[in-house]
Length: 398
Ligand code: AMP
Image 1: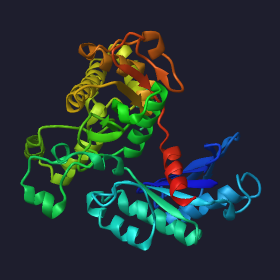
Image 2 (image 1 turned 180 degrees about the horizontal axis):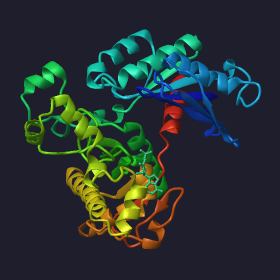
Image 3 (image 1 turned 90 degrees about the horizontal axis):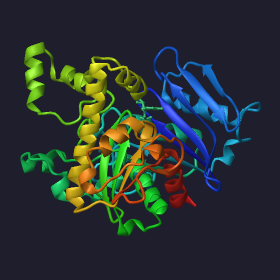
């Protein structure tokens, strides 16, 4: 089966056409600046070069139309006609408490996703536009919604409740939900497989460290805690997001800098994290690592503070699970930045973690970076959210 995976952001759209038999991508790319001047589509067929075409995209329907056109065009298309697309898998950011697993999209499911819009006002509406556009352009092709929040729905109340009046949970569903669930689920299964064990027999901590970053505690194959909350702002220090801070800082900054709540939110989401900590040097760990090695003080503070926060969560989740068998690093930073992995592992000696420095300097596929006598297995494992979405879509539509 050929499965088209769609990940709609507010002004962008990532896509991958995946052959579910080989689990390889056939074509993939990205539409950028949807609804903004200068929109362009990037398209790449397996074995071919990236093509960039500037083309007006007033909305997501036009973006998806261009994707389908690129996939089927005579010259560089990966398939002959749309009939070769058997199903579509959509990443949907917020499923609230309504969705604890992926689901085939029906009119009722669309209504239920809309009811979660309040919880993810920037993301869910864009996801719904993508679903609507595909339904119009490929009528009759089955579609599946795969939620970022679903994997975390197994968290117990003591992990997901905030210390706020209970009525806010009842009235507005204010609680911790967690994100990156597709990645945490994929990597935790992969780690169990790599360790030659069943997920049911393991206590794993997954550190998804990308531009957005979160940690999860996965006990017996089920998520029992994760660091993101009602929104993706909670938890780790990220590329540009602050992560956990004293909530009173918001009022303090608002008064000192004469800022509105919206402006403070923008500051915490877009100007903070390692970007803000490094004195606006960069949110990208490639730049930060270079600056760290050159002795740039703010870059050193940024990288160390980021790593310390990860180590603190590892400690907390070891306590939550009463032990840990494996720790996995994944996503852009987790897969590529040996420096961050080393700094995190330096805090974990009390768990019996021993880092194999030579293995930690490697890149590529799943790699064990702990020594054979380490009490906890530590690995880096490339995540593949698109493949995970394709697998879920296949399972629900075949
Ligand atoms: P993601 O959100 O998973 O795509 O991760 C993106 C982030 O990964 C970038 O902003 C970088 O901070 C980081 N990253 C990607 N490649 C490397 C690399 N080779 N070394 C260090 N960090 C990297």
